Amino acid sequence: MADPTTQSPFVSSSSSSSSGQSQPQLGGCGAAGSAFCAVHDLLFWRDVRKTGIVFGASLLLLLSLATLSAISVVAHLALALLSVTISLRVYKAVVQAVQKSEEGHPFRAYLEMDVTLSPETFQAHATTVALHLNQALRLLLRFFLVEDLVDSVKLAMSMWLLTYVGAVFNGITLLILAELLAFTLPPLYEKYKVQIDHYVGIARNQTKDLMAKIQAKLPGLAKKKPE
Image (cartoon, rainbow, N blue to C red; front, top):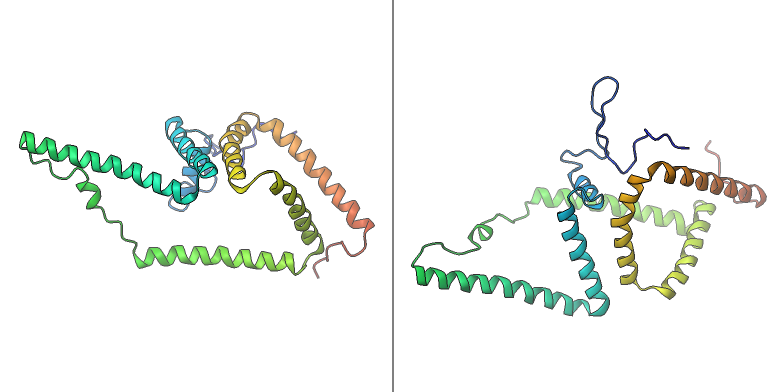
């Protein structure tokens, strides 16, 4: 059974080591890990209000896409946003005219914000995207050109199972289910980490034993040993 003191791969460490130094958080919460930390805090409900807003808004968007077309959803969202901003703009203008005040435009601070994307920032993001695309293309070549027969067979079995999943659920339904699981499983894992890690380890070992037996009985499925 997994050690209860073992730190979860999803939960950042807050305890101190024996040398008196604190353990670094997973992914780092510095500049490089800020995005990961934000997602981590959302999924683990660190701020209930913020997570509730994000979860409710995204779930409402997915449910809207499940019943309406994407064009209708975008149009309704734009109309709702414009209704709020135009109403506030007119209200402020009327108040300024009646009270003869000089409050100015209600969205002046946002209009003066610098939202331009610098070439350096764009190039940095483009480099990161290109790196992930190259890795994905290389992985697809490995699978579909059968560099490793076992991995290609696993992919084929996964795609075969997805044909049955696709016959029951559409893409939006799967996204809704994925979001519900994303916002419910992490807190449950954090609460029952020891038990879950124990059973996951048992399942992983049984899967490895099964694959080893299959590779031993079927010639040509054994992976090549590195020279």
